[in-house]
Image (tube, rainbow, N blue to C red; front, side):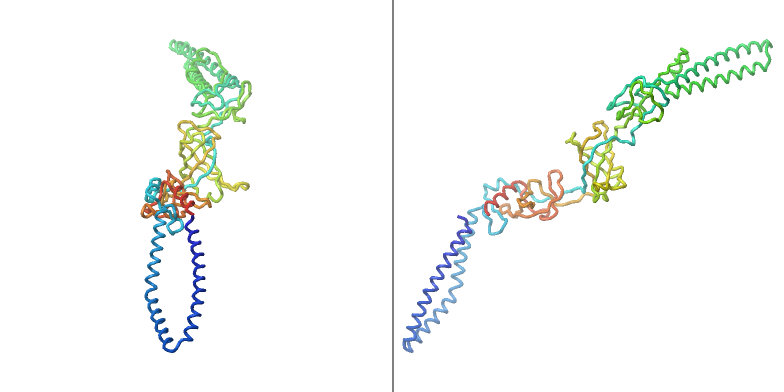
Length: 439
């Protein structure tokens, strides 16, 4: 039977007994009073004296007797509580544990730990468009062949595609012609110099021959440079000059190290310089973008240059570091959110555009607060968070706490306990269950 139910029943029985005694005492008093009135004067005086003596004796004896009984009742109640360790010891939210039950509870002092002041948001990975290059052909022509596809990693100078360029053919033809003129003027000058020694030609003829030679040399240099603009190396130019053969195939290489993010080229397609869409887009993937939309109310705490930590679903045990590079200048009228763009380091080229993830931004210096291990904080049925505090490691009191952030297996406590207090770090749920059973 419940202890409270026992007290209630005893109270009912005691009330009935007191009413019965009061009724009997009233009848007795009336009888005595009638006898007292019928007695003589001496008898009445004697009765009055006896009553006075009895009243005095009762006055002095009553407190000691009652206090003694009260002490006995209190001692008995305390003994009953100590015999039932799961029962609250007269204080709501308190549990006493037996020696056996104490083995299931671990007690540690509340520590002060450092918790960062951070904001979190959800975003996605994208290519760094500041480092993305649109690869156009320098001259118009028809695409002959393609050597890279979307998603391929390419090196600087690696061939992306080739075109059949009439402009290159014209430049190489001009180069071959300049070489021919140069050879002709070289031989002519040599003859004039021999004839001049024998006075067979005049000085004017020799000077004209030298002028033609210098002009041919200049034209040859210009023709070589014109072919070099198309991407031909000196070795390739020397081969054209030696073979006297023009090659109209123009090679378009990648201007940077990166990854192909877009390809609009196809064999047979006629392309022109700066005519969109570009045949290829190559992005530098040493860094990637993290695009997130933060709430309008959180936007004032963000600053360019703040550190960012990114966790992605594809790499649950990895953290990618970066920093904020851009904060949107406008608020989306539909979602009431602001774009925050961060630059994430990816030296191993593991990230892919479109990956979904969470990012955390440190917006202020870390804050030191009391902390309890996660197992020491219990969420009750009404949604409140509680911890169990003890002073003697045997009697535990339930205390409502206000929690904050979670970090490294500890829960930040904003209110409810102080640093140094002893709390149950393991077995807190057991204590809450014991309290629920006792109630």
